[in-house]
Image (cartoon, rainbow, N blue to C red; front, side, top):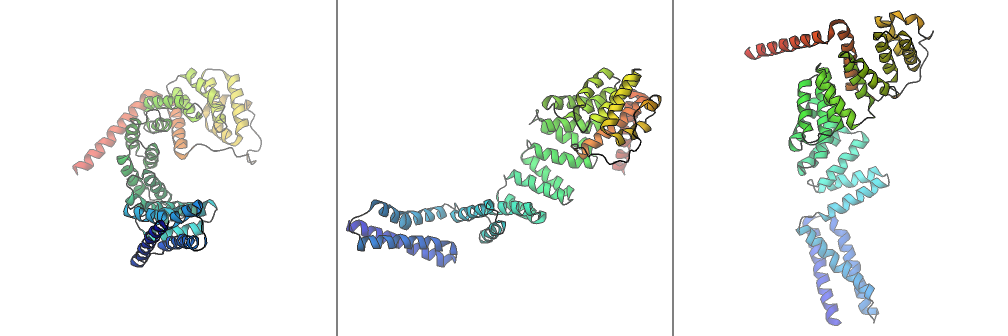
Length: 405
């Protein structure tokens, strides 16, 4: 019994002295709580030896945990560079965040990364806090430091790219996304984000390249197939656009804009029955139903079914009066039935705004398809392909001329 107590005192005191030396040597207050806990354990042991004759197993275990096991664990963790104290501080910061105290969490994390600039989790949590607060520039800096420490933190690459887009630094964002895709080519979200930048720059051919490359890793991705349909639409390559819209529609039948696009392409090819089939599905969508009914009215007129055209057109007007009437008044196709349509007397009356789900690139592609439908009515699809071919050849000639210069 006496030998056990003597061994305990020697080991506990030796560990206490070692931790104290580390405190002085590193001038780091993180050791103070450990010393305090050790002191409590030693004090309990002292009270037990002096005043308690019978050993209590629970008290004995507690003294060993506080005075020996905990400090040994701290020493081993430091030797293995497991950053035990960083983990403790980051856990405390997370607890602050859970309880909504962002200020204390941020203060704790700033002290953490100041003490240890190589603390990955500290920079990552700080970045997330700055991002949530709207401090995009500070968030970018913290995510960048997290990436520097952990090169495989692909989500932070993506976060930085999105923040750069928000800061209107799209070229820098594109470079970040390219770097990410070089490391992780199957990262679909990064491909979509890069594709959006290329579409905005009207670099549709390069967008096709990056989407096609990404499909090798994610052939069943709705977004990749759908976006390929969009970029091929903008290139007037309606055969490929149709192929990818059909694939996208198979993968997600609830995205009605794919069916609307397929209907417009079918009209371009004069495949009216197929166009009707798609449009009858599109009328279920709140945002697109008015235009779907309008397109059905146009098809009915092309087929010589005036009464059916009037019915469809009136439904379209009822769904979205101002927008549809403006389209009808600009389209000579409706001249023969416009007098029989139920056009409201006052179109300036404020309407209930319908939910807008289509993105900017979707709206651009949709408008482009509608314009192509009107053009092919006049010149035919064959002439459109010839004109497009001549346009591409002209662009290539200009590019070759620039290279020679």
